[in-house]
Amino acid sequence: MRKHLLFVAAAFSCGLVSFSQCDPLAHDWGTATFGVSPNPSLGETFETGVLGQPYSDVIYVKVPTLASDINEQFSPIPIDSLKLDGITVFNGVADVSLSTMGLNVFCNNNGDCADPCMFLGGNAYCGDVTGIPNTAGTFPVKINVIVYGNFGFFTSVPYQFENYTLTVIDPASVVLTKNIGEVALGQNAPNPADVSTLITFDLPFAANTHLVIQNLVGEKIFDKMIQGKRGENNYRLDSSNFPNGIYLYHIQMGDKKITRRMIVQH
Image (cartoon, rainbow, N blue to C red; front, side, top):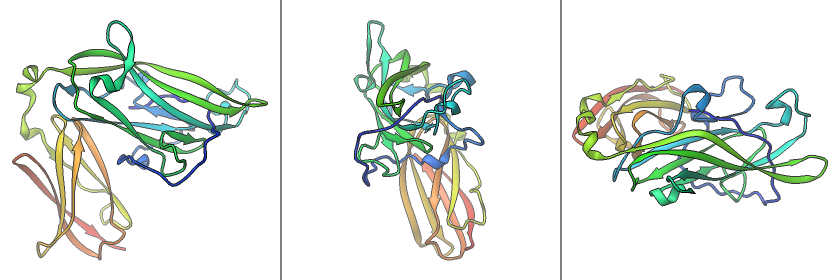
């Protein structure tokens, strides 16, 4: 999942506020100087939802530093910041806010600005799309942003990213796909872990998933409920305060539980 973003900046005061659970570092941008995930040009779009069931997806954003990072034909105009200004869906009549479908976006800018949806130039951020879908169907989606930059004078430019779709399926049509045996838990990486490690698990549909870590004498040292999405999920665990040793970690969704072993070595 990825997308492209443009110019940026802000006449907003930056503070120490962050409300989202998504991890901006969970997406590997490689050598890319900018981008958005999901990226329709790669055949990516939003996760499929199930009517009346918890939904979760993540938008990842890497904001360019210069306009020329986007296209070499552009002047090297500094990009100051970009505001994720919401997501709209076309309901067959008009573009309406995603919230009308029971879903909302919660941004994480690492506390770089008081407005969590204000993203500073040259940095990577993310936003959680969560809620409970209340309407079934397949809907065209647009991501709306406002770009701030110094184009000889400080100004803002609205922009839309298109060619996305969001599909919400009626539960009656997905009963046969809910095979709990499709739940999978990967080996954490790196292993041994030092200050952090990535735990990956797959779900056949969006659901609350319990992540628990215990030492070898059965003491619980970590316990978190994660709103998992259908398909691959990634959770970055802060292991910096874990004593060196061997641990067992497991995920549980319903009555399905899978356990693996993890080593911590500082």
